[in-house]
Every structure is written in structure tokens, then in C-alpha cells.
Image (cartoon, rainbow, N blue to C red; front, side, top):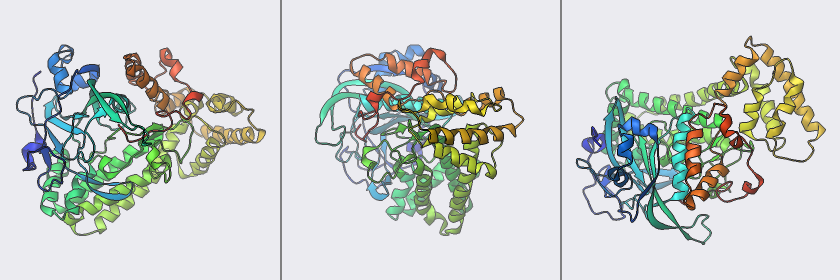
Length: 520
């Protein structure tokens, strides 16, 4: 493998002067040099063909011992010095101080075909930021991260990518539900790839420490290398930088809402400065439509990161980033205007997103009542979001009376549906059909446009768990099946029709299907 190295982060920013890999407060530098932990018996489970191409790695090279050693941390390439980043963050609304890459080790950065990529290992051993943890990851969480990183990209949502999934051959002790019952699981490593892994917390830590010099150095670095279109770093461009981060964050969250994705742990250290979905931990997919749903057991009481609150949390996190950047501008007015713009644009983009999902040529404020009534109907009985929107595209606007039968299969109940429920839906379909008739677009064209924003296939929680259970027995077939299927989530793909189905009853309360923790 021949790479064109371009280690921007380490070439432009100073390191922690202490080279000992011990858990501690890192008070100087932007990162600490670390070596990945050697593994006992590494085995490549799956590799992303797309990311091989992006990085300039051939299929033959990907099957080599050299590649296996690289993506499991068993070899370090010449001209590279792996490192872990320093950052802080707010966790569940509270400042947590120093956090950092506790189990992520950055291998190197490269340029290929006009793109810049940073390559990172997740689960390759402890770093100075590991706190009380071991820096390792297990197969269970690694499968979820690997599959979701690539699936999210094909849904058209900005995300970090995944290059490979590997077993380490080592056992890792984990308490899955934090209930005092730890057990050994198979260790694994995911190789993650992104233009940059910088997070809101990278900037917050320096402001918290009253270190304006380091803050400015990092912001200038970020603008120079990742937002160069804004011009050279300056007070004016610091605000433009924040405005673009705000815009990217909003677009990311709106897209999450569109497909029913719940991140589960939107701490500021899990927010990418590039607006990428990052850190696939206790995430989940809305199955029954519910504004208050969260997959994260740690958040079950307060539900801070529930589905319906994600746009608000995106804004809250941007307020924290604004506070971090304030010392470089020393005026709040510009930040306040940008944050107000987020609120206004959210209303506009949310309306457009729902209009697109419902098949309107152009949604207007006059549609807000119809959308609100639709969301009320969605919650009359547990209703599968993905199936309902997909089936809704089959409605003929001259036949509103057919609507209820079209969506009936999306309901999670075998009991007889009440007349009141049917009437509410039928009344809505009458209004909906009249609204569709206002558009000149044909039913066939509307179906195409709706199916382009309403995925047929998503990585439902129970599907990921089926892949995990099979992989734990050495069967990786489902990993490959889902990897291929989720490359075309908006296509009909009749060969995968069995996965266009509601969550089965056995998965309703099963750990990994309805309840997830940060333990990975």
C-alpha cells in the first residue's frame, strides 16, 4: 500500500510534551502520541469496497496481512505517528472537563484523488484520555458502528465513514446494561475515516482553561484547512466559520428527523465541527413514531436526547460552541444573530422536509395544519414510520378513501382498530388528497419524489441485533447482507423484501433492540 501522507493535524499543531501513555490531565498540546495495542489473533470480518477506492487501496491489498495488521493496530506505517486528540465537552448538559479520544487512535492523514482523509481506529487500546476505561471495543458495538456509518452515507446524510471491521481475538469485559453483571465479549476494532474528526469539544477545552492562544491556533488551523473558502482567519471570518458550522449542524439534524434516526448521545464532544454524524453509540431508529423516544437507557429518565428534541439540542450545543469561540470575537451580537438564524431556518427547513416526505411540490405555511394533523394521527396507535411513509406514496390523489387501507400494515396492533381512529385518518386523507390535487404533478411522479426521501430500508434496531447474534457465532452473512442492502435504501430491491417489515414482537423489549447503553 502506497499512501500520499498529509498529516495536517500533527504537522501544524504541537503535541503533548509528555510521551508516557498514562491516564492523566493533558495540560499542553492538542493531542498525545500513542501506540495501538497489539492484538492476539486479528481477523478481518468485513471491508467497505467504497472506502478502499476512496483511499486508493486495491482489493488485493485489502486481503493482505499488511492491511489486516494496519486496521487492527498491529503495525504502524513508516512516516506516521499515531495519536489521540485532546478535547472536552458537555455530557447530558453538564460540563465534564477533559474527555479526549479515550478509545480512538488516529493513524494518519492522506490525500487521494483530490480528497483529504484521516484514518482512525476505534477500540485499539488505552490513551491518556481513557479515564477508567480500557480503550477497547466489542464486536456488538463495532458492528453497529460499521454498518451505520456506511448506511448513513447512502441515506444522503453527512457522516464519518467506516473502512473495516475486525475481530481482535481478545476478550473484553463489559457490563452491557450497567446493572452489575459484567461479562466477557469478543473484542473488535473499527477503522473509521473522515475528512477530520474535530469536535465542538476540541475548542471548548481551551476556552474552559482560559487558553486563548491555543483556541486561536486551533480555529485558525480549522479555517485554513477545512473552511478555506471563507478566506484567511480574521474576526469577521470567525463568525462566518461559526455560521457555516451552524448551517451544517442544522442540515444534519433535519436529515436525522427525516429518516427517523435518533443519535442517543448528543453531547458536545460527539458533535463534529464539519457537521458529520459521529460516534454511533446507543443510536436507534424510530419504529413506532414517538417524539419522546430515546434508545439510550442512560437517558431514559429525562429523555434529553429524545427524537423530538434533537433540533433543540443541536441549537444548545451551538450555544456552547459560541461560548467557546467568543474570546476570539469578544462581541456576542454576531453569535446571537447566527443562533437566531438557526431557529428561523429550522422552521423553514423542517417545513420543506415534511412537505417533501408528503409529496408536495412546494410546502407553504398553509400546510402546517395538515402536517400537524398528520403527526397527531401517527400517534393514535403505534405506527411504523418507515413503512407508513413508504406506503403513503402509493396513494392516488383521486382516491382518498383507499388511504387507510394503504397504511394499515404500518400499525403495531392486531386488535380491531376503533371507528374513531379510522375516521380521524379518513378525514385526514380527504384533506391530504385535496392538497395533492393543488399540485399539477402526476401520482407517478409524486411517488418517485416521495420514495427519494422516504427510505424503504433502514438498519432497524432488531436487524442490527440479528447480525450481532449471528456474528457472535462466527456467521457474518447478515453483516454483508445489510451492508449491500443499505447501499440503496431508497430502491425497491425486491430481493430484500423480508427486511421491509415492522419490528417483531420478540424485539419489543429485548436488549439491543429497544434498549441500548453507552457500554461498548
